[in-house]
Image (cartoon, rainbow, N blue to C red; front, side, top):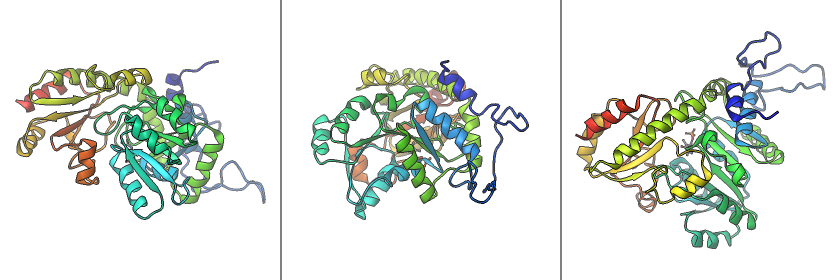
Length: 380
Ligand SMILES: *Cc1c(COP(=O)(O)O)cnc(C)c1O
């Protein structure tokens, strides 16, 4: 029988407890598990290597991403690092020039130590990408929509080009969540999430995961996750499982609010540019429409304000908290130049198009009119 992802998310681990019949899956905090007898290991022996609560989450995440196995990690960045364990010294990695600041930082730092080579490219520049692929990269990293400019790249196209030279493709799907985009179905070998964001959705854990398109790949990752100790905390896994049950209702409402805010911003004279893939004016709207099941709830825009006026604008907002991170039920505002992307060099920010006038919103589930009124009031 076909079970929809909607139901899989809600019912993940429900009635999994056979001992007491608890409806919600129990949380197994035990660090270790007895052996049944000498030489007779049970399914679990030590919680770094494996844990029943974490397994429920890992299996559901793999299922709803259309993968063959997944590893739940202690953060999104530990998921990034886990994938970097697959490289040999000197291997080449191709990554987007506007990737997540923390991803950029670790790739850049490891390349400076000559652990790997990295080329940061605009993946929409097919000529540059094809030239780089001739250098036989081991991994091609994709992030779409990208942070913070919501640039869209064609996952299917990049995967087919990368696979021709035997490179593996990793897609960071954090911005859309498994509800709105499933990169494995578009050819990606791995999907990465910072579960800190939409999957948990309540800004109260740090976590990550990698979903692989084959059992062989996920087993290899599980081996490295145990060897390096990056597996996720049990309590955080349990909270994430709770968050996951409401992913669909949360993201649907967040997206509805984001569309209304994008439309409002489009008509404001102070807004010089707006980046939201759902607007037909977005340069890759057609690609987003083809590969996504929705346009998400992240948007950025540029304000024609100097730093002092920008400060005033932000201080006048009541329903948008000035904070990093995204994907929670509460609306947030961020200034990428000085916050999320502060770890990028000024030159890298310039190349990536991250200006001082750029504002990023993570739209929450509040009432849309309240949110729009709030922005309108602050602009005035
Ligand atoms: C937050 C984020 C990460 C890193 O995840 P953490 O959980 O903060 O370690 C990676 N990629 C993207 C796109 C993110 O937004």
